[in-house]
Image (cartoon, rainbow, N blue to C red; front, top):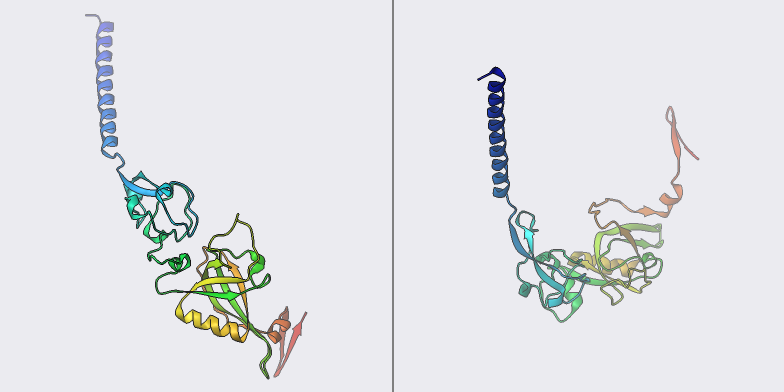
Amino acid sequence: MGRPVVLIVVGLLFAGFAGFMTFSYLRGQADGISEQRVEYSQVVVAAVDVPRGELIDVDHVKVVDWPAHAIPEGAIDQTELVVGKLARIAMIANEPVTDAKLAKNKSSSLLSMLVGEGRRAMSVKVNEVTGISGFVAPGSRIDVLMSVRERGDEPPRSRVILQGVEVLAVDQSIEQIDNKPVVVNTVTMDVSPGDAEVLTLAANEGSLHLALRNDKDKAVSYTSGRTLDQITSFGYGAKVIRGTEVENLNW
């Protein structure tokens, strides 16, 4: 056998061995992928957009396969456990339905179903100004400010008295209409019993104003309030100290 023939045979053997090793490697990878196959479990999701305060019926929900590793806490796997309950928050189509999104009590009053456990629903009168020109809607998060007029030697004062309060309803609606601002006469809020006492006293002794905040903003700001003298004296300035003498320069 000539030298060229030997080289060809050796080359074919190496090529066959390389092909066999490549095939074995790819087969091993495929087996590994099949072993890591994603597991699914059944989860109840919204079949359509469900407004806040809607009584859920069979047409509102459906059961789908959901990746087991991504199932949200409190997810439900049977539509029978959802139908007949009230949506505590709005849900969009194909969003998983969880316990936290459903009202837990079975009152005949829709509003009372939206009130959290240990909480209270309390309404306060507002106008176009104090109600932020109608932009406060059910589900909004607001701060409540109280302003008091001058009393004897006490100057006019304003202060934030409640922060991050959830709005349950505006007037008698628990869902905003067509996503448009509506001027209302009352705003109903979800408050603690202690906050209800604060609101009652503040409404009787002063004027209430609402400040709309970002829904994701959970921070609490600490303030001592403001008096009229403090507001009118705000500005840029400097303090000049000459020995024992202090001079305030404002501009």
